Image (tube, one colour):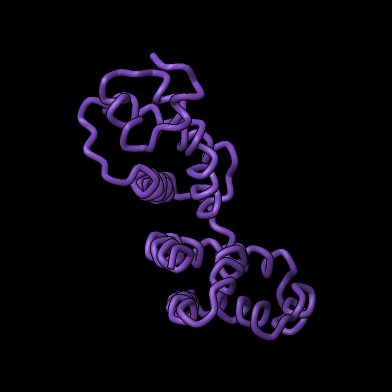
Length: 196
């Protein structure tokens, strides 16, 4: 084992070679160098601090576990791709709750290329709105497109405010489910755009 200062001077390829040889200090140096960057990449995709921290820890544990079999040309690229895959897998398996406005804000950050993504999301949302039961669709449209309050909708349709709230909740749940199925494509596209 070398003194810490000497490890800091080694390029990634050398540290990886040492890691393959069970050098724990090389692993610690790689962790110090990349864990914050990997966490940021995860957090940019899914803004849950605890889950992102867990995913980063799991990734580095996996890196240590598979150290003897590693065949990596670019560690930084490998870690970024690996953490994005872990986030996508988490979203697929856990059915994480989505904030539709957060997705819209994310896509608006990227101009020309993101217009295609925004159009895709808009199309998916419109298609899912069309599939809502008639009364549910009517209430949702009055709320989100005509910007009427729940009270105004209830008055216009001669129903209770509670019914309006329930129908909007049903509509949002349905729309979130539809968008969750599409999320891996959105995230992958955003990842490409942020790296280009």
